[in-house]
Length: 373
Ligand SMILES: [Zn+2]
Image 1 (cartoon, protein in one colour):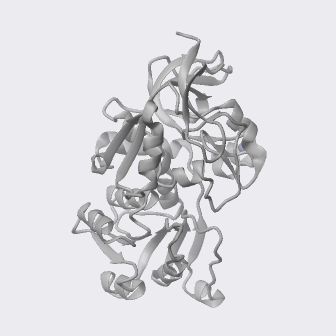
Image 2 (cartoon, protein in one colour):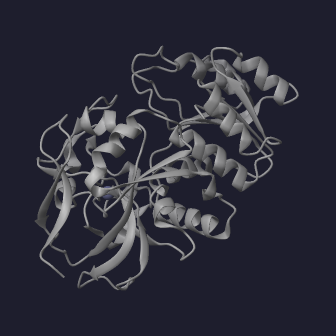
Image 3 (cartoon, protein in one colour):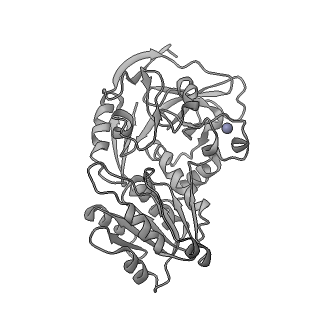
């Protein structure tokens, strides 16, 4: 193996990535080195990574830095203390880097660790995890090192391009699990045409929801969500159709069991926070709302007694653990989670900036934007 590799590095906030030769990562005893085959770029990554238009406080690593969240590939080298993996195995990365030893890490809830940070991205909320970011550069490179505890094996029938997308599928999956999803439920997905929303619809269908009610702001993209399963998916076009009456119509007046909010604010558009309030009003008695969208600058107001009398639960969910990632891999391998619904667009590492430009067009969650080093 050569001592250098190609990597796309960012030199300052707002500047395009530059393709350069850099040293191969130095492997720690608990790490694995992965030959990168695919890295997913989410719709908002251009705004968040290159322009730092993020609703959260972010703390980048020291520049120049290699971005690229997670990814999928083959293990090419293992650290001296790694026992559970072998060279050549196909794996996907769970991008959440953590301390590994706090009470939340030990409880398999990595998103609550004080150091948590997303590999190949920036630290959010607080700078505690920046040293982890700097020790583990991102996936826009021929090789990437991550702790062995951050990888999960993938079956031979799962393409790398689709496995790389699990970095976001996992968020929606964990949220549905945390919200107490059960087969036969009616699930409401607010913001269904974005990446997390589309995953919420695909997962709810895969896991046996009786009905999925999907909201969206874009008529064409919402029609594509309906096409995923015309018998079980019911849509509400925001701005033209009213949320609560539509939910009542689709549920015989009862409301939904589980409401997954994936809504995000889009620069230049009116805030969609009213849709969140309306969706809360669409919950059935005993129903649960789970928030995973990006409306951090808004308050959710509610009537105290209403939530007692109707036993309504509202909760947040943050990231996912390897057990959930393994379950996703198994669903995809078995074909219950239909990854073939994605329209995958691939870009070489040389064209990584074009991938960001394409992502910036926000063409909808069914597009799977992949960089292949
Ligand atoms: Zn921890």
